[in-house]
Length: 346
Image (tube, rainbow, N blue to C red; front, top):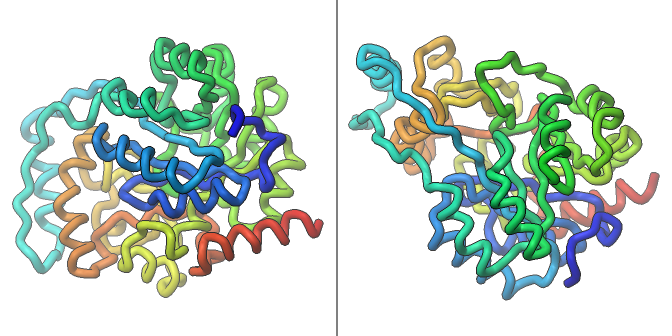
């Protein structure tokens, strides 16, 4: 397929990049083959697994693939007494199985440059970044390979900086979105703009295309954001429970069968604000100390894995957008057909 262009999409959506093995080659290729954009969430993934996923997916589709990465910043761990308090907060949780919790050590993540090595060998159509702007050398190299660049913005200032660096489009993330907030600087107050307000703020501030994300679950939602200035919609929660996704059975059960719960913004799983389904963990960890991201993510990793292995949705991260109750467990193709019908019937 030729280089990515929004006008070539059969359906103007990006299946959102989601980490933790949710974005499988089957899911990504099914979306791409439909004429939309399939995305990998490679935030915590090492180079070898990235290489394998890209090669496998390119055998299944010649459609548009988006590879998404976090832009990490260097962190310093807090004083020993605060570290101890962070461990104790987790150790005091009422979990049946005993867990050995240790303060993680640097490096807490794979360097972005190493993660991108297999990307340059098997280029996707699109590269997107979350939490900030990557080094210009990365943007330049992507452009020489014909790869389009998109970066998440949660406010006008971030969007203006994204356009200035030469990105091809902006992913406007409303406060309704599931998973991690894409704010650049956690020391600044988050504007917490919901999607429609964010689109209103951005469409007069920047001239590059805008993709809208946050709480989008239906074809009517896609129409709404396009009418509000976006060229496409990015949808993650809508695909969580389809059979092609790598979402765990515990996660799917929580999303489909515990819809009396609301979503909340929590720092306790990873050290960064992220929207998840409320559970025992989010309640008991409210206002408790936590390590900076991604050290907190590494600290809670074993706890979350044990909870998953025990089919216990009360102590694992159930990232979900605010409108998750509209979710269904159709196949990926079934979801795409439904969205296509809803979008074009209006």
